[in-house]
Length: 527
Image (tube, rainbow, N blue to C red; front, side):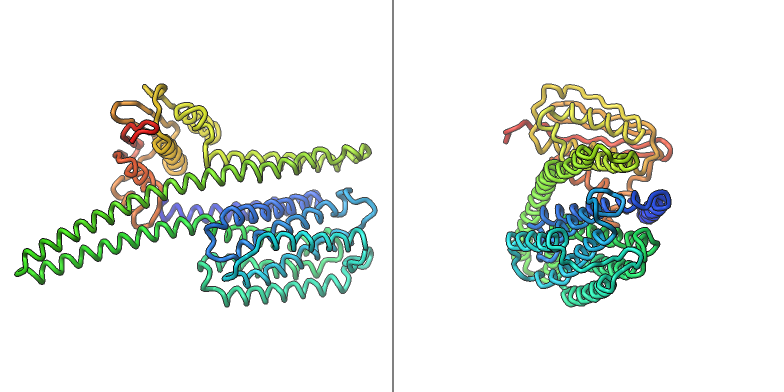
C-alpha cells in the first residue's frame, strides 16, 4: 500500500467511525432504547473479543498485563449484558425501575476501574489464571446477590429526583482510580510497545470522560447519558486495538526483527571481510582462507534465514488455523447462544408487546450478521475445505464467493490438477497467493475482471493471475514496498521463494497486470 493509500485508509477509517457514531445518534432520536441496546451489545462483543484475543495469544505476551485485562473484560462484558437486559423498557426484569440498571452500571465500572488499577502489578509477575477466574466469578456473584437477593447495594437513582449522591461520588472515585491506573501504566512504560501504551492511556482517558459524563444526567435517556455511551464504545475499541497489536502483530514483528538482525550481522561480516582483504593484501593465503570461512558463514546464515522464514510461514498458518478454530468453535457458538436467547426471549411472555418483539428481532438479526462475519473471518484465516475438497474446489469456491462479495468478475480454470496430490505446504501457498492476488486487485487495480489459471506442467505447477485494471510501474512499486516495509507483492515473492519457485510480474499502464508463478510439483510425503 502506497503512502497516499495509507493516508486514504486512515481517512476512510475515521470517516467510517464518525458515520457509525452519527448513525447511533440518529438511532437514539428514533428510539433511545434501541440505541442503548446496540451500543451496549457492541461493547459486550468487543469485551468478549478482548478476552478471546488476549487468551488465545497469551503464549506470545511478554507480560501478563493484557492477559489480566482480557480476563477482566470477560466479566465486565457479562455485567454490561445484565445491565442491558435490565434497562428501562426492556421488560426482562419486571418490577424494577431505573435504579436497577444504574446499580449494575456502577458495579461494572467499579469492576473495570479496579481491574485496570490492579493489572500493572502483573507486568512482571506470574499470573495464576485459575485463581483470577475464580476471584472474578466470586466477586460478580457477590455483586449480583447484593443487588437482586439481599438488596443491600446502595441506591443509585431515585425516580423524580435523579442520581443519588452515592452514584455521583462513585463516578468521581472511579475517575480517580483510572487516573491512578494511568500513573502506574506510565511507570511501567518500558514493558510496552510505544503504540500499545498510547492506545491504553488514551483509552483510560476516554473512560474517565465517560464516567464524568454519567454524573450529569437526570433521566436515563439524557444527552450526557448518550455521550457517556459514545465514549465507552471508543474506550473499548482502543483497548481491543491494543490487545490485537500486542497479541497478534508484535509476535510476528519480533520474528521479522530477528531476521533483520541476522541480515545485519551478515552485512557487517561482509563489510569486515572487505576491510580485511584490503589491509592484508600481502597475506593473500591467509586472506583467501578467511574469505572461505566467511563465505561458509554467509551460506549458513542464509540457510538459517531461509529456515526461519519457512518456520515463520508455517507458524503463521498454524496460528491462523488455531484462531480460525477458536473463532468458529467459541466466539461463533457464544454468539449463536445469544441469538437463541434473543429468539426465545418471549416464549414465556406471550403478552409481550409488538414493539418489544420488533426490537428484539432487530437485535437478533444484528447478532446473526455478526455470526456470519465471524464465520467468514474464520474461513479466511483457514479454509477448512482445503483438507476435504482439495485445492481446485477450494479455490473455485473462494473465487465465486469473492466475486459475489466484491462485484468483481473472477474466471477460474484448472488444467491437469484434478489427479494431483500436492503436499500441504504447496497447496496452502498457492491458495494464499491467489487470495493475496485477488485482495490486491480489489484494493488497487480498479479492475472489472480477473482471470486465474492453475496448470500442471511437470515437474512444475504454473499459476497465472491476470486483470484488466489500470496497471502500475513494477520496479518502482517493488522498490517502494521494500522501503516502506509493505507486504503485498513482497509477501507473494517470499512465499514463492520458500517453495524454490519463481515469480514474474508484468504490468502496463491502462493494460492491467499479469502475475505468473512457477513452483516445483511436490507430492505429499515426498522428500
